[in-house]
Length: 191
Image 1 (cartoon, rainbow, N blue to C red):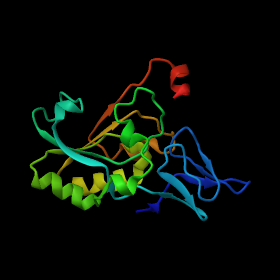
Image 2 (cartoon, helix red, strand yellow):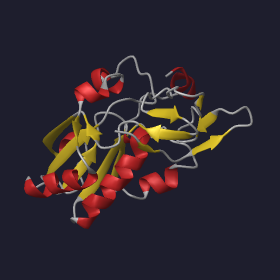
Image 3 (cartoon, one colour):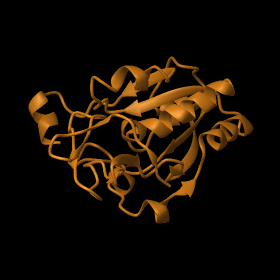
Image 4 (cartoon, helix red, strand yellow):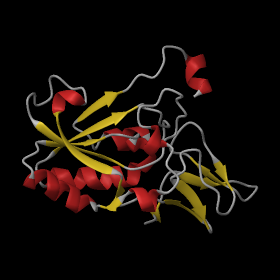
């Protein structure tokens, strides 16, 4: 399922530039960004994984790992496909580099995810497995739906997001775990 994407601009040469992450992918018709989930369709950019999840699991919050955020409580974990990094050591490469999202995922609206958390007695929902930055529109809508049900939200992210998108994205989360991938700028540039 596709949904209109935000954080993009039209360039003078006719390409569309994604402004969600620092890669600033420049796309011609039909092309996908490095993350594979943001695509140019016609004169607009779309998020191709909106409303799709590659998996759900109920975990202890400490597995996120968060030790001082509602300790001892269950969290509903979910993610989609794709990633804006290319880590050779990725633990979830089968979904972060998935190219057949329709075969690997189930439909899950923001409201369904919030309801599932309530029905399963979860205090929070974790946006995890792959980086929620690349599916920011879906993550934000889901965080809003969770907050309407008094469910807390947790982003597990590498934090590879543009200055333009960062304030709005993170404002929708109650807790964030920034997953450090390297200790040097040079290493990050190679990802």
